[in-house]
Length: 320
Image (tube, rainbow, N blue to C red; front, side):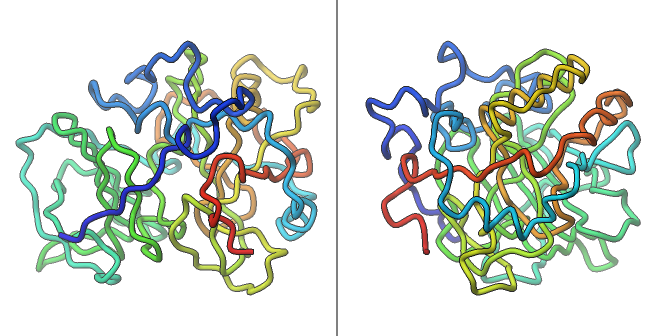
């Protein structure tokens, strides 16, 4: 097994004396497990993890207009989830004694070669026979280990995937520089998924994962990898953080949608993969309310701005 590299936490990088960018959840309390996909007593990474950083007080990035100009700014956001099993990314939670299997990877050199707890109970994005990304996200709730695979398939000779990555949910360790994961940015998928319990209970405490069609061949910490087609830094890089503008008026939306809007203003969204412009991801659940999904589809992309995260990343975190 190749080891993942440890990096600084958000709090250790540059948040001393900057209350505007505190990475802790409100009151310093740990995220409620029920709000994160029912992963037992495991956290979804520590409270000082970059995913939990409040970016509402950080400055606008100098390349914000250029990046958003290449991201179909005239469209509205699209929640890539809904109240049917056809949409959303499922999360499978298992016990520590679940059987683990060998997985053969297409991108073997950038995958974690351990045995994965995959089986007939593993839920795959889109269903067992679906095409597309076919993500599988599995949490071992006893060891608080997160397993994620992309393009996951069970064939006659065993399990196959495009790539696979493993994380300790209690650690801030990242993957080695240059390594992919189950998404193009080399980041975990689970912490960026919006879930219905956290919306319902008004407990969204993290950035949300989203995609764009065309991205840069660069990435910003903590992203470790990119898959873009443009060398220019005027295109958005993997790991870029965007937030909904503070003055965006959501008063005509329902209460649930207003909670999501508040989270998009406070924690923002993270560019994590290539896909359709402004599609953001949530966990698969038949409980998603139709009116919430409809409301979220009315949020204009041009109400977002890129965040200058220089205050919460290492000094060499921006390749441009």
